[in-house]
Structure formats: structure tokens, C-alpha cells
Image (cartoon, rainbow, N blue to C red; front, side, top):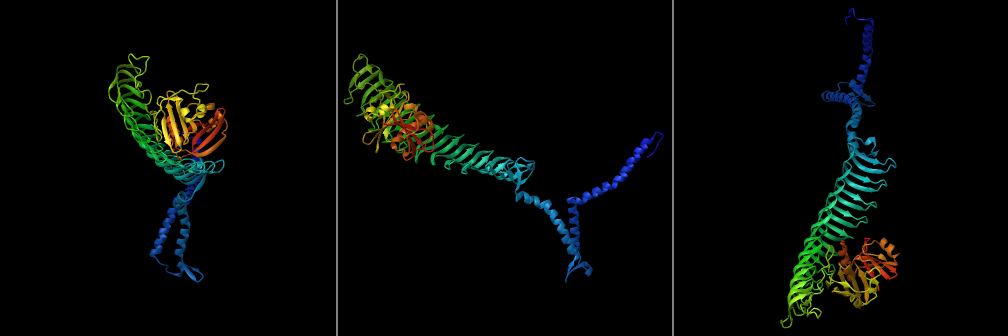
Length: 595
């Protein structure tokens, strides 16, 4: 450094002190760097490997030349080169293990315990046991990838119970896996995506019974699958967004009760319906929102004979159609219908001979408008002209001409709602215009207890219109249904003609305010504690009423006459009432008022 006149004493001292400091610190800095090179595993490994390669080369290219190249061990001599190589390996192998082999072994074969969400998890890759910070309970056992739960592992709850085992991706269920109920039973086995059921899978109830097997999309039934109830097949076919959609089959026990098209869980489009007792075809045609709508054929469940062929709307006859006597096959009426009654142009036939008895216009079941009546035996005209409400013009106040017009004997189609057939077996439909004429309660409703105390024929006489009628080995059932009148009940009698019960299957209140559809706890609140509960078999007679109940409430139940049910008996001021529950459900399907 050159000094000029302007250079001051302080500058000289400052520069000199900096030079002195560098001179003094150079040995320390160089020593530190040398020490780092010595201690650096990479450098050490490199030097050792260099020495090993050199020693190995010397060992291979040269042999010991004298005793000075050996070490004496007792009566044996060991080459100094071999001792050197072994010594080097004793240092090198641990370094190689720690640097290369141990991380691989740890990640793939050793399970490292660590607290969940701890700093130790951050960026870690390998097998772990993630522990609860509070109790030390194992919450997860499996691999981490850069600190995230990814791979095949097991998830546990804070009680140590297995929740899930299978594939994970970033803490979410992904790929194949199994989930479990808290009691340890399988809940689901199959595919997952983002924590939801996806692909092919099997779903179980908490008690282990099978619920569904088939395809899932986004956690819902979608694609082809089979739905179960109480371990029996309820539905088999297509699903979309968790509901029956497309072609499928609905079952009652082992019998198919419907096969055809579904939409939104209800019958929609073309389908065929069968009675759940005998399995005989009862309807073949079109549906809308679960009800007969469009063109269809209705059959008698007992004989298989055609009852009606033509148009339907909202479950009743509508448009052009033909009505037949199922016992004889003879026509009863052919022409226009409205709201289930003869309406418009039509022809009425004698039920015994099939001969024409009236041809002309109708209005809601009565002769109304231009028409002609005929003698069914001879075919001669007996009356002709303008009719009004069943009376020929000029005869008002007098007798109704013979035949008088159809007044409510059309078989009732019931308004199917997409669960079980309207004709449960062994009978004919009826009651579409049923009107109750018997005793009533204080609020004006049907007095079911009073009906139950009558004989079956006496109880039947309290209604106008024709009932649905079934005859079975253990008795008979008469069904009265007219939802416009709020009537939905069945009169059951045994084989000796004695009253068994009056079954209420619609939402009409029974003594104490009990209704079909209530839970057992709600019924107890309405009627008091049950006097008894029994396990019984459904039976054919009860199955007819249950089928009506299912239809009315739009429920899906896979029940057959052999199904087991729980029956609770309540004692009320008006008499005894039984409530019927299907196994595994807590919704009353039927109320039976006892005599």
C-alpha cells in the first residue's frame, strides 16, 4: 500500500490491524476447513474408497515378497495388506450402511412411532405408527410419503377400533379398501375415491346383514347392483344417483313382483307386475310416477283372466278401454272411461250372456245423453232416447229403466305407487267407489272397533261399492279402498266365517290417535305400554293388507307370507289393537282392530 501525504495515522492503524487479524485467523480457518473435509462423510467415503481401490489393486497386482510383509499370529502369518483391507472395511461398511442402506431399511421395513401432526411427520417418508398425543393410542399404521398419509395402511379411532384398511392418498381413502362399523363388523368392501364409495363394492348393515352389492359413483348406488332387505333380495337392476333407475326387478320374498322400467325409485315406463302371494301376472303396461298410466292390461290374480284392457291415468281407468268379467271372460263394457267410471260413448254388456244391454252415452257411470237399451235375451230394443243421470227422459221420478247405468262396480286399480302390486293374490280388485255408511267416531271417522264387533257380512254391509275379495285356505279378506273418501281397510275372517280383525292400512287414526307409519315409541305414547309382543309369520291374509299399506305409503318392503314380523298388542278403551312391524324396521305397517 502506498502512503500519500493525505494518509492519516488512523487509516494506517486500521489497515495494519486488518492485515494482522487475517494473518492470525488464517491457520484457524484452514484448520476448520480441513477438519470439515475429514469429518464430511462424503469426503471420508471418497478417500476410503480410493484407499480401498488402491489397496485392492496392490493386492491383485502384487504379492508379499518377504516376512516383513506379514504379521505373526502364533504359528500363523497374515499378510499386512489383508489386515489393512479388513481394517478399512471395518470403518467403511458402517458408513455405507448409515448413508445408503439404513434409510432404505427404515423406510420399507421398520415402523417408526411418532405423534400425529407433530413436526417429526413433516417431510418424512417411511412406515409409521401415528399416535394420539393425549392417550398414545395408535391412530394410523402404514406409510407416509413426504409427511402425507399415502399408500396401504390402517386407520383407527381414539378407542383403538379399526375404522378402515386399504389405500390412502393424501389422507383420503383411495383405491381398494374396507371400512368397519364400531362393533368390528364390515361396513363396506370395495373401491374408494376421495373418501367415497366408487366402483364395484359391497355394503353391509351394522349387524352384518348384506345391504347392497354392485356399482357406486360418488358414494351412491349407480350402475348395476342388487339391493337387499333383511338379507333377502329386494331389487336387482339399474341405479342412478342412489335410486332405482332403468331396467330392474322388485321382489317380495323369492317372488318377482315387478319387472320393468324405473325412474327416481318408482315404476316408470313399461313394466309387468305380479301378485306377491301367488306370483301371477296382474298388470302389463305403462306407468308414470309409480301408478298405472298409459296403455295397459289388468288381470285377475286368482284366475289370470283379463279384467281390463285400455287406458289408465293416475292409477284408474281413463280413455278408451274394455272391461271383462274375470270369472267368465265375457265383456262387461267397452268404450270411454273417466276417473275410473264409464264416461262418454260406450257399450254395456250383460254379465251372464255377454249380450248388449245398452249402447250410447255415459256420464260418470250413469246413462246420460243419447242411448238405447236392449233385452239381453232377445236383442230387442226396450228403451231409447235421451237419458239424464240414468233416467230416460220423461221417466223422471219413476223407476230407473232396467240396467240403469253403471253405478260403481268397476274393479278398483288402487293407484299403484311403485312398491307392491295392488292385487296381492287370489282375488279380484274392487272398492273404487266405496262409501262408508256405518257407525262413526266422535270426530266423524270410521268406527273400526264397532266394525270389528260385527260379523264379516254385517261389516261388509256398511259399505257401498264392490270390495276386493280374496279366498284362501285359512279364511278370506275383503278390501275396501277409496282414497277420495279416506277409506283404506280390510275385513279379515277365518275359514269358519268368524271375524279375525279389521285391518287399517291407510293413515286413518285408530283408537287413541294411533296411525300406520308410527314408530313403536310413538304408538306407546298414543296407546300406552303394549300388553304383549309376539313373533309371528306374516301369513297370506295379513300379506294382502300389508301390500295395500306398502302401496299407500310408497315404501319398499321385501315381505312374503313366510316373513317374520313382530306384533305388539295394545289394550284401549275401545278394545284391543295390534300393530305389525317387519323385522329390522321401526315403522308400523298395519294396525289390526280386534273384535
